[in-house]
Length: 249
Image 1 (cartoon, rainbow, N blue to C red):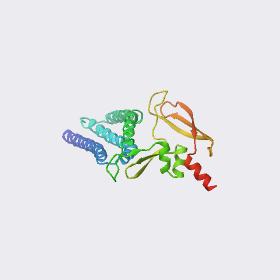
Image 2 (cartoon, rainbow, N blue to C red; image 1 turned 90 degrees about the vertical axis):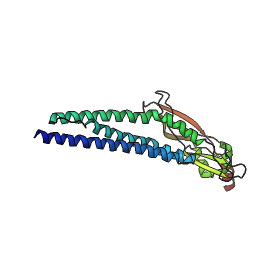
Image 3 (tube, rainbow, N blue to C red; image 1 turned 180 degrees about the vertical axis):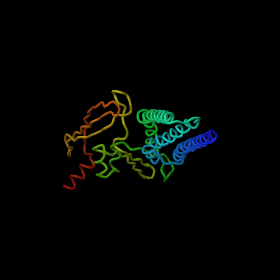
Image 4 (tube, rainbow, N blue to C red; image 1 turned 45 degrees about the horizontal axis):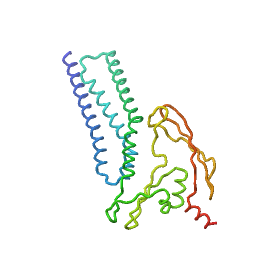
């Protein structure tokens, strides 16, 4: 009888270790897939969007799979079993797994954005190469880029919902327009210093008109400490939009 029980324990221990190894392998493959996919992306904007949308989520999934593997490995040395022992081991494993998961989640949510923000900024302003000449293109300023944005695009920029970057090949006139979210990422909170200070609501106090500025009130709130702040932003209708409105009238 004892020999049968021992064999059952051995079978469980071997299976638990195999599950742990498989989980660790999957976790490593997830990270490797992410790294390789980034390495194969030559377009800076494509890489920017992929990092912005997928990197934190991918790392979180890999971390969860890794933790699951650790939980199985921690229970791959069973030598005795009883209802009380099952409860103790199960509860301890679950509690430790949850603690580690919470630590990793907080790191990805509150600390990792500092690192990712620098990478995204570098990618956004990395000189674009013209497909026409193979030379570096020029990033146009706010006033220069209006000549290449239609009225809808300018309206989106005026209310800060979208931000456009316009790159121009001055030799051939080729233009590339890239679209970015107006509220790109969380700012550093002035209260707790975490990268968790975001715009939660916008309120137009005064709509801009031709020849007269408007005002937009932006409400900020920290996702970590709850600190709130307000900022008033001036809204203007671009010269190009003014000319178009006058012509239509």
